[in-house]
Image (cartoon, rainbow, N blue to C red):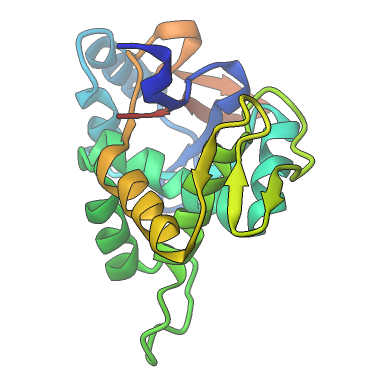
Length: 212
């Protein structure tokens, strides 16, 4: 797959660290760690096994603070929203953007007031995809700089016109949501996927990429 089809590649900077604990806040038992890691070496079902064993997987932090802050530049809730999406790519195999938005609306993990029909998750995820297309990366500090010329928006990286009027803008947004997916990289690649103990916590690192 060509790099032009990858909106956000998986790398160390985009690693998300999750904490695993039981109902009492206890660590994953050592025998369960061995059991889960044994499955993960074969496929992604090991992530689901953690939940089947009665443990909870919750967002802790991003390994790279710069990427987390880049996300917060777009929206302060975006780091948490992306963490929910990434976990669901492993546990529910949700990858396409429309299904992801539908699932977020149903779960409402941030606890927004959706009673009046505000499309919080659609808006925030759409903005994320748009900013990726305009130049945000997981490796560089995002300044928010891109060029607006009249009704045209051009990419800072290659000066290509992305859209030039309102109709084109909506087509551009629809293209992003219809064409790109959240994809989980191979487990164990660059240390992703295995449960480990650190600072008296049981943790797991997951990663993702967004590509057509």
